[in-house]
Length: 553
Image (cartoon, rainbow, N blue to C red; front, side, top):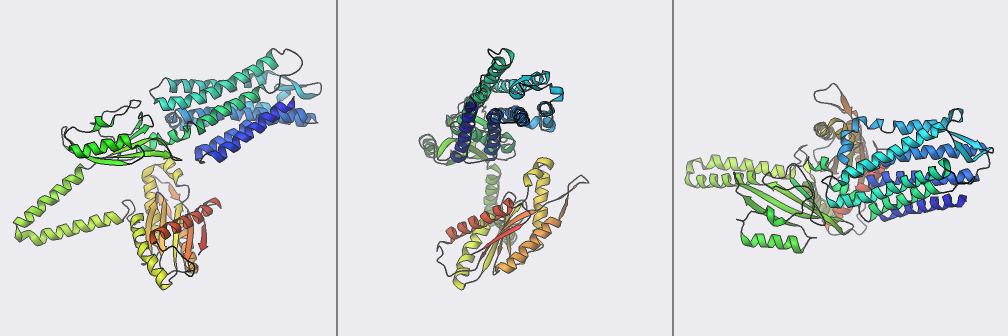
């Protein structure tokens, strides 16, 4: 009857391939694929035990099976915490290393099998075997992991989470209940109360197969990983905009801390767009906004409203759909306080009126307006954190530069840089230190650039450099200088004696050949160049980071 476990192993492999080809792979999906592969090991080991021709090889697969089961128990617990209560994972992060210790001890007991206290052979082989006291301790510990997972799921189901989240959690609950039930049945039928000398095969393997089916339903049909990403409270609370996340049934999934205080909403409530709009707003704009929101859920819509409770405040409301693969999962509504900008505009208007009335101060006030305008222009083209240019400015410059370079056959190059493992810096030291690392890195890069080169922040920890009139050889040399400068740059952590050294991965694109037919649309060509240099950057990251990979066209 070894074929039962073999068939289960093959079916689990088919499910693994199905998940891999049917979804967009994120970090959460990668973690699940590893978890799924571990589920495949149990039926494989059970099959291998029955066909192995030596006692040592049979014992090896028995030990491997129980080591795998220990890893699965820990994986189930972490998988449950991640899907149902991400805030719990944040609270126990410092002691999370203690969670796997009981399972690891059971794995050690299975591996060493001291005095055959874990398992003993029958008739000189391990196809039929007797389990000792260490096995029962192992069984209690591993089932304990399952019970803890069930308790966490129960707490999620009775909490105030949105019904959409609870629906997805129920799939995970079914998977864990099924596998625990089959494991318990396997122990009772084959170990505690064996009906005959023959073992009833495949019970635990079937339980693992059925649980995998429930997990995949949660991933593919219910898109459980997508809602985790959307509702990631630790991220949205760092944004200054007020954020409201709705599911596809207009149920409030998340509210961040920046939501205006006069908008009284709660997680789990059904959202009504009309309740957040003040009654004194002009009728035409209000009707258009509400009609677009209600009748065209796939479109973005925005409006600016005036709230007159206590201090009058102007708020810009923007509604965008959340789309995954063309399917709408919900909406994100942002609230931006425009009161300060309105105040500045009103003050500027007042100053202009005073200028018309007081000719004597015209020159001085005009100079002030000129300087203010210069600052606003600089703010529009520079990055607020680093002071270097922003992506919008670089794109505008490249639109003119590309046309000129094509006309006069001038070679040029583009460098795309990414700070390696930047997320770990934010996680370990906080966002303030992360900002300091970004600023210090920009200074190190600027020290190696020429006056004609343009450095811009591409987004997050990515930067892009335009090198005009620069062939590939010179660009390679400059890129290596930049990489070395960043690598040797030591950043001191504020209020600490600790220092940080970082590296960057660099993608290089050099344009030499203008004889081939190129897209006459400069914006399309720029997007193509960004995509090409992004590909070589990720090649540099895949090859180990802290390196430069280039391509020439």
